[in-house]
Length: 120
Image (cartoon, rainbow, N blue to C red):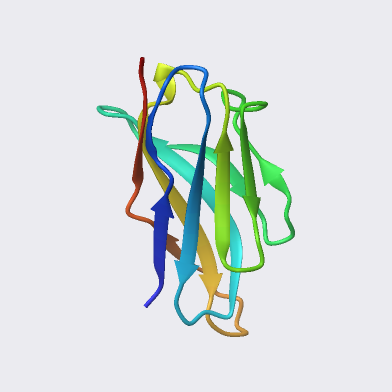
């Protein structure tokens, strides 16, 4: 059973920073691309960062320069968020594409989400 567990959310003042973590556990061969998404109340889930197995990163324009995604060799992905605004308030989810064998077939998994609230 593959599990993704996010942590690091909370309440922060406008202009502040938070670092989210997501740890993948389970018997897997390899974690390929990983990403972060968020869903604000009443809105659709949106993509905010991605990182490939090789470490290449990508972001939508509205977070470029403020958010940074990274990963380590221990099945974890991180999201450093700086200069937060109230519009960044949302539940943040991590996503991972994993393989279990040498066939190359990927499986998608999501975490349960962590709440980020930006408010004074």
